[in-house]
Image 1 (spheres, rainbow, N blue to C red):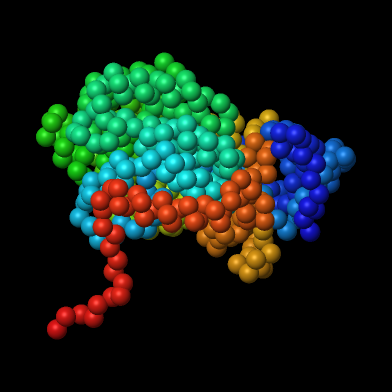
Image 2: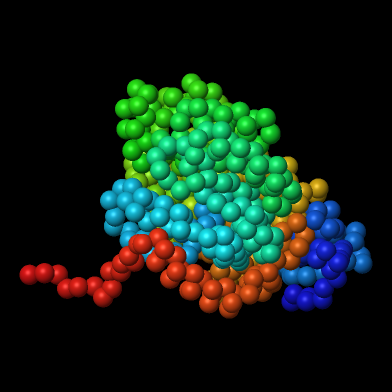
Length: 471
């Protein structure tokens, strides 16, 4: 049984807290500890091992959980739009022509977003993330009001890396000349560089950034020892555009500009040729794969599953949920299971990739790709106390399988998450986000969505009721 006694410091962190359960450490030895325990002090892990040893080493600690629980590192979402889509979630039709959902829906909605919309949208997305065990979220670079998104993250207790709009072509919202965009990015890096709310350089990418902007953004990221992220080649349209403009494929051209490197995080990078894939590997750029988005939008991931080839060649890879009109659900376990299934099926080889590798991408391997493995991604002494407790008393769990990783990835999802800690702070208890008034947020979201749709001048559509086939 879980002990509900609390012994919190004034800042909300746990004083002498031990969490008991089966521990999936994701440490270098990938230890699985049956009836194990994790000892915490402040925001850090100070002990990991068999429960009897940890309890003896820290005898005055408050103990929660039991051997029936499953304790895992906090999940890492490497690509998530925190604003825009949430307030019109699952509203964009899934049968639109390529590109139409972006330019007829997403861009107008972002242009109409208010500061209040940004904070509310981020609050809801991050709350859903937390209840599904996602403790670290890397924003995709479409935030207009970073201060309000940071406020949302701090309120719900999520660990977030923020981006802001960065593009200098066309007439899109928040586009501007290179100097203006770079100044905006530099200000963000200065404003948010803490352990829980940090920032990185983010461009929209595709062929919506000039060579000058891409080069300047890359230099800015390197000078601040942070990452540069941008969208590239989720479909073949970027390939067509770059070939027409430069005579070269996107990542060939960007590599020759010096944009690719260990500091670069490529969102999507689905449609690569052999040369581009080799340049990704040689430069040590990371790729974030968002497989639900590619299936939802029909972007050809089953035909061009380069991500598996990158992984097989020791490439740096992470997983992402994308947005609420692409991946729709902000649940890292669903993403890990889908990626694992695609790896097996596209290769027609069930031995090539499995649930253990999928969980690695969601935790330690994702953390390594995103440059945060010294802090999160595994349960090890000295790391941040970002922990997820799955309750295995629900109907999906008994009888407990011999391999909890198989049962976690293939047989479950975020719905079995009971408690979540970020930096030692309890942010989800019994499946509820402690930092969000869900009832009030639900009412506010309904009102905001209607107003947003009106300002954006878009017309929601529905396939219901389904019409009978015409004669």
